[in-house]
Length: 132
Image (cartoon, rainbow, N blue to C red; front, side, top):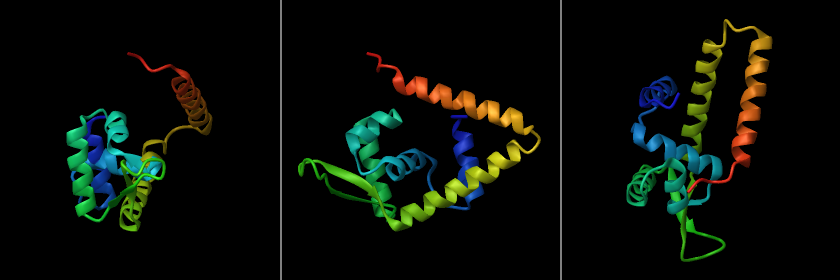
């Protein structure tokens, strides 16, 4: 599921022009923003300098903007712009189309079982203390 080819397929299905490397930070900024670059880098598993460049690129494309953090004016946070939100909405719609096609031949009880198990997995994962 985390293969780069899946992101490329999703971007293609959404009919958008976006560098695949910019996809994870953009989606996270939309989902949990405003967010600082250090926190974003930690969440996407990349180094700070790489993510800082990616956020700068997203900003130059008009998909995100940076603003002072409410809690600490020394920190700059990335937030989604209306143009960026429209793009992530297209990605969400494409993801839903792809999922519907994938699960088209599944029985409703199997889908319900999968949803239940994935919910349990996510809740357990959320409760795990960070390693290291």
